Structure formats: C-alpha cells, structure tokens
Length: 281
Ligand SMILES: Cc1cc2nc3c(=O)[nH]c(=O)nc-3n(C[C@H](O)[C@H](O)[C@H](O)COP(=O)(O)OP(=O)(O)OC[C@H]3O[C@@H](n4cnc5c(N)ncnc54)[C@H](O)[C@@H]3O)c2cc1C
Image: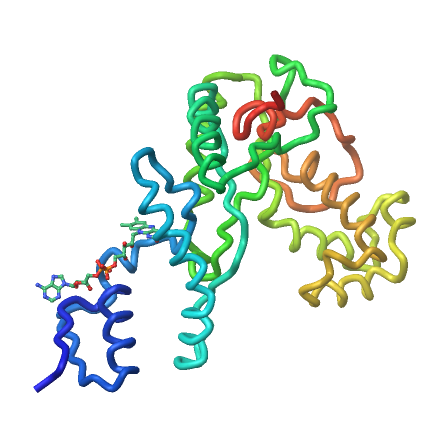
C-alpha cells in the first residue's frame, strides 16, 4: 500500500513523486502513457517576466521564486539521473512585429519595470546605421533563427517561422529575390570545406591572403567546436561567408560550388530594423 498515489506522470506528477520518495514515502505513479502530455510539448522556457499579465502580480512572485529555485532542482536532477537535461540560463528576448506589438511591449515593460522585472527595452541594432530604401532592397536577412535548447534540436520551428515571414515579405516587397539566414547558415560549412579543398584552388586572392596557413590546416581547425572564436581564421571565414551569402547560393542554393565571379551587391532588407524588432525611439 503506497503512502502517496500520484495520478499523472508529467513533470508535475513526477516532480511531486520524486520529492515524496526522497523524503522516504512509498510512492506509486499511475499513468497509462507517462510523459505524453503537455510536458512533452512544452518549449521548456522559464520566463516569468514575459509571462507577466495585469492582475497576476502574485503569480509573478511565485514564478520568480520558482525560477530562482530551478537551477538547484535541475542540478539535483542531473546528479540523480546522470543525464544532461539541457538546462541553460539565458536572457529572454521579446520582439515586436509591428507598431501595435511595440505598444504592447512598452506597456508590459512599464508594468514589469514597476515590479522590478523587464526593465530594458533597447533597440536591437545600431540605431546610427543609415535607413535603407526598402523599395530598392533585393535581399532579406534573418538573424539567429535557431533553437537554443538542445532538446529542440531537429524541431523545424525556425524554418516554419521563416517561411511564414518570407511569404509576408514577398507580398510587401515583391522585388526581394534572395532570402538568407545568419546563424545558422545551412550549407555554409560544406561550402567552405569545398572552397578550401584542393589547397584552396577555389579561393579568391583576397580570401587566400586572409588565411594564416595552408587551407588544409584551417579545415582541421574547423573540427574544433571553438573554431568560430579563433581570430587566426575568423577574417578568412567571414570573407568566405559573405561570398557564400551574396553569390554562391543565389537561386535556392542550386549552386553551392565556389564561384570566381560576382560581387557583394544589392541592398539588404535589415529585418531586425524594419520588422522583427523595434526601432530606436
Ligand atoms: C505547446 C506548449 C508549450 C508550452 N511551453 C511551456 C514553456 O515553455 N514553459 C513552461 O513552463 N510551460 C510550458 N507549457 C506548459 C507546460 O507544458 C505544462 O504546464 C506542464 O507540462 C504541465 O505538466 P503536468 O505534469 O501537470 O501535465 P502533463 O505533462 O500534461 O501530464 C499529465 C499526465 O497525466 C496523464 N493522465 C491524464 N489522464 C489520466 C488519468 N485519468 N489517469 C492517469 N494518468 C492520466 C497523462 O498521460 C499525462 O502524462 C507549454 C505547454 C504546451 C502545450
């Protein structure tokens, strides 16, 4: 006969059951399909500030307190299970899509600010940069379309969102011809490896000059996860990346081979400035 009967084995039921068992109680969990409920669908974000609503100040305090306790809980869980649960601490970023969104965000920020959370609403990009003439833009760039949680790797959320925005942009700005993502840049790694193979035969003179050593050594360095912070190869990789984005993948990545011709050309729709985050006030 158990001391505690928990009906439902989602995060809540299992969390309760675990804590009870730790305290020496005999626990039984009943669930025909444990872990199949909302817990399997959740994005896993703990973001008390962005979930703030008027009239829910008490809930905010509970959420903040829970978020403060969670790192300890997560560490215990990792120690007990021997598994990485993918918990990472990061800030939360809320982007405004249009002026109405921005008004809501400002309102939320003022409310959050009065409660000691969400105190910042900075512009994301360099506000000193010149505004582009959107009518002349032919390329749209998406920033940081990636899932930050390891558990979401393979979930095509970013792609679905990008496709939706691409359709909206095509209606607003039919002259746009190229759509590229920064971080991640699908295919870049393979393309760079191809460009560096054969001792850099596919490189332009300027790109070759930026490389510190034989291309084969740079290729070997790329296997290291920290390669992107290596200042010795960063300038050459940035130059290759610029060429990849602006010339090599034109036409739905039909040609991923390095090309000798073509310049960085055209205007770029800076989505961060125009649509996805707010302008500086
Ligand atoms: C799309 C989505 C995204 C979300 N994103 C987030 C997020 O980013 N951050 C966040 O904090 N929260 C998020 N949530 C909310 C979060 O998932 C839930 O609050 C949480 O998972 C609830 O856990 P639970 O254990 O109560 O329920 P569940 O995980 O739903 O577990 C309930 C369990 O009960 C079992 N069960 C049902 N009926 C019976 C029965 N009669 N007998 C026995 N067992 C039964 C089911 O099989 C299931 O396993 C999200 C939810 C959804 C749907």
